[in-house]
Image 1 (cartoon, rainbow, N blue to C red):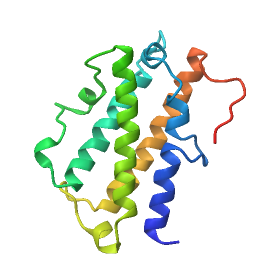
Image 2 (image 1 turned 90 degrees about the horizontal axis):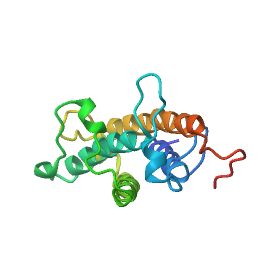
Image 3 (image 1 turned 120 degrees about the horizontal axis):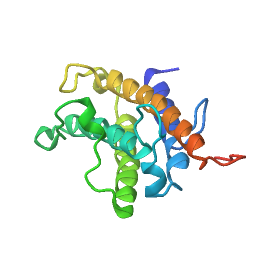
Image 4 (image 1 turned 45 degrees about the vertical axis):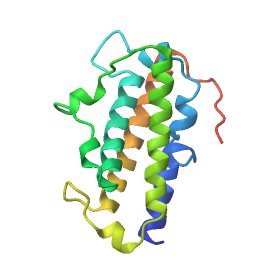
Length: 164
């Protein structure tokens, strides 16, 4: 299997093709803003929405870097700041969620149009496109697990799930 094919499969499994872990789209698309903001009463945890903002930050950052639009790169003081939610309205939840899906798809299109040379080329930040895409896919899988757990803890997870 070629590296590009493997990366494309990993990328698709993070958004809408179920594999060994659940994809983001069916996990997030039916959540309300209230459910997305929920946190357990005890222990430190980010909400689902905070996690979506965090994922969106890093995907947008890579997208603008790959497109050579560094001036549009999102900024954050540190990693913790990437979890912030400036507007907690229901419309803002839908916008953030849908933007996450859109940016993910845009990066997938870049990956699909890449060749060995572009996959091996460094993007600003020193790592290659292939390594950045692999790392973001693993990052997604990690946080998708957290999102599923939060859904289960708050009781919004379906008793019998069917995705696909």
